[in-house]
Amino acid sequence: MQHDLKIKYEFAQLHFQGKKDWEIRLNDRDFKTGDWVQFTVLEFGFVYSRQITNVFEGFGLEKNYVILSIKND
Image 1: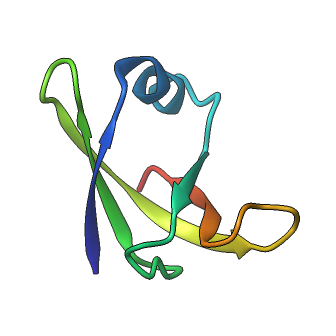
Image 2: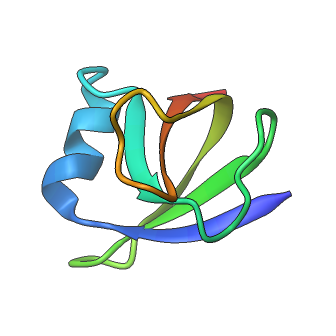
């Protein structure tokens, strides 16, 4: 499954620099390991994709929020 999400340029840059391989998001889309996220950079409309490798919930996170581990594949 593919999820379309928006992202600020400053955070997209961290993905491309290899400094951030995760996202904290509201789990309103039922994210699953193996799903794809298509990010659209708000400021420029540039689009790129990452695959979800793990979905973490609980662990002190707010209710309905998850940490998505993502990889560039």
